[in-house]
Image 1 (cartoon, rainbow, N blue to C red):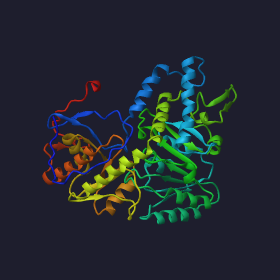
Image 2: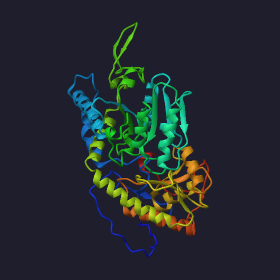
Image 3: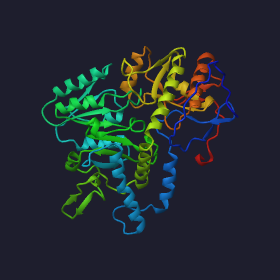
Image 4: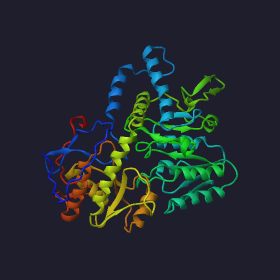
Length: 447
């Protein structure tokens, strides 16, 4: 069954096509609560991006060769070790890191920042905006952590970091900064803030979870010291991430985990720990996830022009369409327009965000995110700035799995919902809106 959406009378726009990598969910169809099914409109890339077709094919090719790494004598172990270690160089190139920078494999960005927090020299002062994702906001502990309120202009944001660093005691200092907001998609002035940090002798840790899938990153051009990223945001959903950056703090820190692989020599009386990245990679590593992450990074790096153009055109189309919906208000960090990736959050006056997301999913086959997006301070504040009340919003995030039809579908769907309401009844039995007496069945493999 094909969903019928009303026409708006607006002439069809010509949208350029760009050569971009394909994703595994392109042909996915989902059931509708009203009957039939429809092609899935994945507009939730900021939470977890779909798997690249190239990544899926590469993993399928590698799996017969999968074996233990580093200490296996078998030929398959040699293959696995080669791919695992080669990926360090791929990630270093992906972010244009310094040749001396280390690459530590982690589970995700949250894991990376917790590792870095455990590795800070004693009495390190940390400066972080309070609108950061919780992964970058929460790991830092102690009296020298300064959470500063994000100003409404980029220039004021730079000045705020300058003032906070000037107020820090003598000793090591670290500025933690997102590249692109996971709530609004806006890019922060990373290079300008890094220049301020240098004047104060501070280092900079960049949360690139939302930036890395959308824009080319250069550690050397931005002049940052650490970059954290996640494979599940980068179209490699196999549970791997990385912390890339200067080796000295990591080399001097106690191992993140104690166990095999992190050790050079163990006796009854003592332990000699490894000094390289494996110092913080105890246990059997996620070899498949690491390989998938490397394939994804190589694929994106070869296609940046098409990726950026594709996203910018869809984002412009989306924002034009949503802005015409009665009661619509977009959340923004900054008063003036800034460069941004394809993520935006909004509220619609008089409509519960969770209810809207449920209706979009059940009746239109559209996947979006609702809530506070693991950035509670930011979301609550920006909703108030937008002139609304409440604690939650709806987030739409574009990526390689997004199409013009998906954008048009959500705009038309929201117009219909605002004008006419839902076609089904919904309830909230456990804190989340769901269709009453939902007739849809989960796929057989969920049984």
